[in-house]
Amino acid sequence: MPPIGVTGTGAARTSTGERAQATTGTAGIGECPTTTSGTPICYRFASQFPPKSAWVSLNCLISHARPAMVTSFNNGPSEADNAIAAIKAVSRQARIDPRIAFAVMMQESSGKVRPIIGDTGKSYGLFQVQQPGIPLCNNYAKNHCPKSVITSQVQNGIYGHNGTSTPPQAPGLAYWMRVQRDNIGRAVRGYNSGSVPNPSDLTNATATRSYASDIANRLVGGLLGAQHKNTCPGF
Image (cartoon, rainbow, N blue to C red; front, top):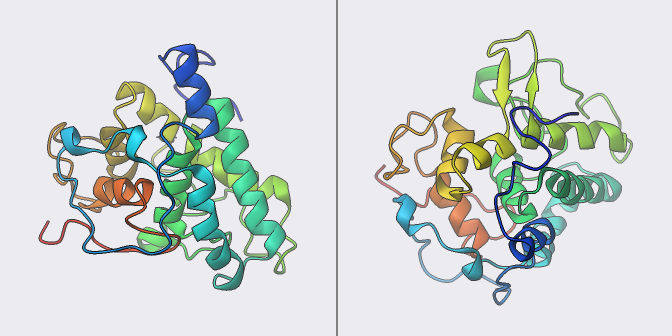
């Protein structure tokens, strides 16, 4: 699907080297932890969001997530692998770091290709987009959801969608990366809540207040695989 609010060259305003890192997820590969230790950090403010040099690699994120994606969530192995492949391909097309997209997918649905319909029946698919009628895997037997359906869910999350539902247009992750000028904390805040009420304090929102901090903890290996935790308790 064509990007919404994103041009083919405008999504990444970076040098050639940075763009290559963004599309492969190889920038600043940190050590891949085998377990989490201690209490997750509350990255409350945009200025605290960890730089890419502190993130773990895409392979590390996948290695922790894939076992749960296959064994715990009624996904078949090929469905989990198709979701991972779609993250890589669509992120490359949108020129965003696939680690961001992967972390958002795990935050939204734990990588379930048949997730519950969230937000009291309004959010659908791997990225929990508010678009009734998007292709879903729920009507397919385990390990038989078509690759095209899984890819479409990832496209809806990264590119957003046009539709007749409310809202009629929902911008995706690539849109938020562009309008926030690649400030990742603000971009994921916008993706979750539909706006960035306070560009400094990322917990200032009516949606999941710890969302940006949760994503940050995933990226640095503080939350592994399908773990979910409010990383800013009290907000």
